[in-house]
Each structure stands twice: as structure tokens, then as C-alpha cells.
Length: 401
Ligand code: C6P
Image 1: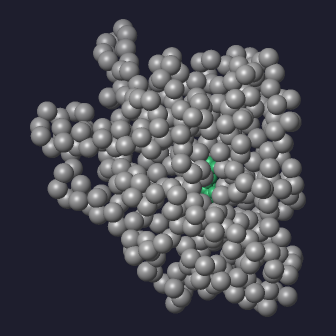
Image 2: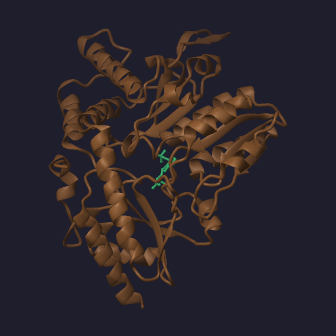
Image 3: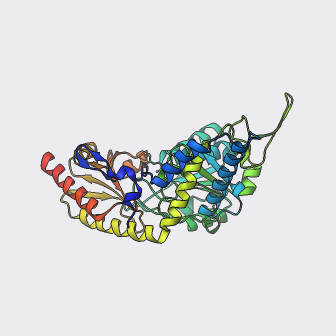
């Protein structure tokens, strides 16, 4: 794909070498279309939203509203008011735990998560369970890193009212059979939140087809800026939920005796939002639409196959996460070599990967490793970059063996 020139950062050098950026699951690089749109907006259009009667404020308000509508289309929600702008996936999950969880879950009720959750989709539920006397159940995975669907189904019980599950695992790459999970959960009477932080960059999300109750992702992982993310929620839930935070722009009327709240989405967006970042996110949606999901899938799947083949041939290398359905991400360990050492040598070769527990300590425990090295690919990565990764791993072996 001829997209590399769209990304100024990809021209960079790191430690004297051409940058090979393979940390896309942490955050993606930004196309000029996003950078330029934000700069243009700040230089020539910027003003606060919702509060001003003057022209620039009204124009900024309209631009942000248009992004909400673009986001509605991006996830195929029914209404733009089902789209809440948050700071990211983490805040979106905390919002649902605090607002939906606190209001509707009662002592003795159950929440199911999976063993492969990112801490952002584990700790908020654990804290809620401690606070309210709920039971947190964990659906197990097998040694390929696949969710055990039968075991998941067995966990669904009369008092299971909530399921919080990742669409794609950031540590393993596993794509969960999310439609089936949602169907089973609904059958048992549970509402479902899908953590789409690692899915939204790779898969076409269709919240109506999935029929999920909540879906969230972060702007910075889909080629947009940091500081903005999205929570989709079904209208009936958002209407029934209490606000997450209180302040300006989320009220209907305020009096010392009583305050009434605005309707969603404003009810959940207290304070001045990340205006510039929202504009940048809109440019990211446009950019992704221009590239097209078909082209993204074809390239990323091809790259994943190529990299899996190449890495599998390296002596002493074990891939952690070998699910049948995977997004373009490979976690691996090298016999006797700490992942941080791998990351450090690769850095000297100009290659950016992530080494660590990836905020998924239970996954590391399952596979009995302290950490993994993780190469994660975007549609702008190339076979040559995979070759550079393989060559650099051989260098690691030479140094540490
Ligand atoms: N994962 C990584 O894997 P925030 O930080 O709010 O943008 O996203 C949190 C988050 C939630 N769920 C999943 C599945 C994720 O992968 C992440 C972020 C990054 O490198 C950082 S740990």
C-alpha cells in the first residue's frame, strides 16, 4: 500500500537507523491529514463549543457535532446521541462501571470478565465488586490464548447481570467470537460491554450487528490523537444511567435545591471537552475510510502470516498467543533472554517494539512468563520491516547466547 508517505513520523531515524515502528498496539503514528487538520483548526477555526453565541464558537460546535455523526457511522450506531466522547477506552470503561454498575448492580450480583482482559477492563470491575459486594467471575482461556466458550457459557448464571470482554486481546492478538458471546450473555439476561481498543484499528465495527450494550475504543490507536476516545452505549442505557462526572455543560437547570441533567450525550461530557482532539479524531475517521477496511485487512493479514512464518523459524523463539483468529500482533519470548533485553537491542537497531506485561498480568501468569516482547503491525508496515525485525532478533541471540 502506498501510505507510508502519509505518516511523517515514519521518516524518522532512531539510534542512527531508519525507524521500524512495530508498537502500533500501544499507539499508532499519525497521518499528515490528522496533524494538518488539527493545526488548521487551531490556527484558523478554534473556539470553545456549546457556550458561545459568536460565529467561531458556533462553527467549532458544528465541527464537533459532525465528528460525532462520523463516529456514529464508523461504528454504525443508530443515533449520534449514543456516542460519548471520553479521554480514551480506560475512561469509557470506568464511566460504565461507575455509572451503570453502581446504579444497576446489587449485592450478590455477578460480573463476568475474561482471563485475557487488559487491566483497564479488569480493575474497574474488581473495584466495583469490592465496593458493592458483587462476585467477579473470570472466563478462562486455553494455551493458544483462545477464550473457552463452553466455560464462559457455564459461568452465565441467574445473577450474572454484566459481561465485560475484550474484542481483541492486546497481549495475544486473539480475536474473540464477540457476536456469540453477546448472544449468549443476552440470553442469560446480562448486558455486555466490549472493549474495542485493539479491534477498532483493525476490524470494521458494527455495534448494531453485534448488538452490544456498550463498545469503547481510544482515538490514539486508530491514527487519531491522544486524549480522546469513544464510548458507544445503547440509548435506553444512557438515558437510565446517572452522570459520571458533574460540572458545566451536562446540566439542564441548576438550583441550590436541585439540579436536573441534560440528555445524553451531554449528560456524560462534563466540562470543556478535548475540542482539538475531537477534530483530529474526525480526520482519522475520514482517513481510515479513504484507505478502506478491505485493503487494511488484506495487508495486515498478509503481514501477520509472513511475520508468523518468519519468527517461527528462529531457534528458541516461542510465540505466545496462537489463536485461530488473530489480529496483526505477535507476542513472543526467547529462551533464557528477558524481553526487556530484546527490546533494548532492537531499539539500537531502530526497531520499536513493546516489552513488558502489556497491562495484562493474568495473561502472563497463564503462560508462566514474566513478560513478552510484542511486535504489532499497522497497514503502513512492510515485509522489509518484518525482515529487519527477524535480523535484529538474530542479533539478540548472538549477543545473549
Ligand atoms: N493497551 C498496549 O497494549 P487507553 O490507555 O485508555 O488508550 O487504552 C487502554 C486499553 C484498553 N483495552 C485494551 C485491550 C488495550 O489494549 C488498552 C491499551 C496499550 O500497549 C497500552 S497498555
